[in-house]
Length: 329
Length: 269
Image (cartoon, rainbow over all chains, first blue to last red; front, side, top):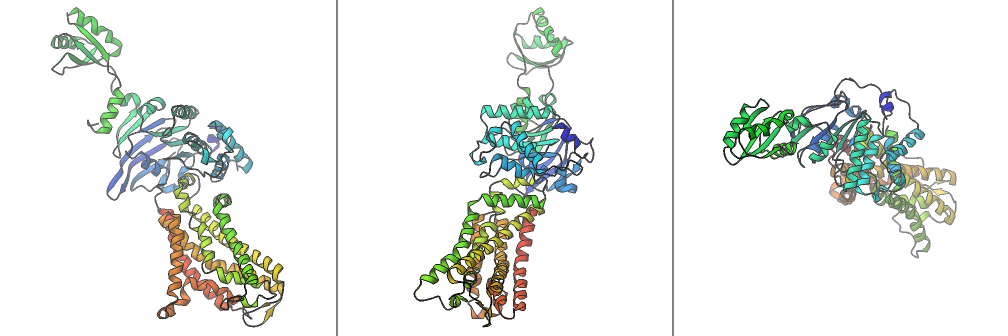
């Protein structure tokens, strides 16, 4: 797959980000479904586009794929401007949006054969003859583990099989950028795992993946970077670690809150102490390498230590804060 | 690339039942008319051209069928495909699948238009072939009388009857292009076919009003018998050209409208 990608004509700018979106807006009669989205996906990223249903993820992806026209904004795919290059901007790009659809009365193999003929083999690429294209159809069907059902009508396929068929259809284009809209929605747990494994395998071959999801766990498992989107806007962006916020936040339950705060404030390893003013709970920020100094210091000062707990699910808390608008980003 | 999309459209047509329903309908028309002519006691209706000349003239059957079917039945059969080429694709969600490949929307539109046109021509060819074959077998290969009272031999008659069928395809396709427009505008196949039926009925009713007499020559539904010009001796070229111009005036806005809608509209299915 990599060799084919490399033999394709070079992009307008091989150094350009895989995907660059600036000021993207889609307005329907005054309602902004997408309201000024900026995104930068670097080559080789597995990029999560994370947000609740209705946040504008699919609308954004439809604009990336050229299915709907942006009201405002600019999109560059592999360095090519969507507006200037039209359908040509999709060269090296493949993907799907919403429920992937095929001709139910034709077999999986026949669907893919018909679609493969709609693909430009590349201006300088090998002039693919029909035989080679058809062989490639069987190859990608094998990749998504549909080889044995290739001759069956797609109308008889389960949701999971259709999802895998959509991945196969995308792979036919030997993409360098893969755009997937909620690829695991509607699948049973086994299907979810299969699709995730597949995405991971593809990413390992060097394909840049842009993947939307409403599931934080999915993005955590698959992606190295993510944008969190809510109400048509990107509310946070970065690596997963950056999104989770600073490491080394701990919650303590102590016998004497005020004394504990004073003791911890003198420790070099502790960079911040937050005292809520009531109860027996304190929150501290502490160098994770030196957190083992906290307990002895409290014990030495005669303060009872009942619990010292690293803050769990920092990313999930932040995600919920952001999408529910409970806190300013 | 348009060729690739056209190949795809034709492959889909081959797989769809309605394609064969339309073709069967086109083939059935001459057969039913032939049976009715042969078994009826009262003889053929007088007002239908060529019906009275069927004795011994097999070629009268495809022409009789043409006179019978170009006004309503054939446009309806053509609409089964023309009214579905766009809406069927959006309804099934497959339009987005196609448009995320390397083809442009104008290429896809061109292929769909060609597929609908090819299907229309196929309907006429099937009807002509079945009519000419069945008519010649049952009634014989006698000389075909022209509308000017002269006669032409079987060979020339066969060619003229075939040309008449192809010429009638122009008017049939003009009505089908209205279906294509409705298919693009409403994204609903039933509305596209139903809307075309309504247009035909309305125009035919309008043609009955004496006060609208001046409009009649410009109605698309009045072009259904323009191929009569081929059966005059000599051939009435002016009538043929005039009819093509009227058809073009109806088809052009329909096709341009369908093109603009198809190439600009947001694909939300």
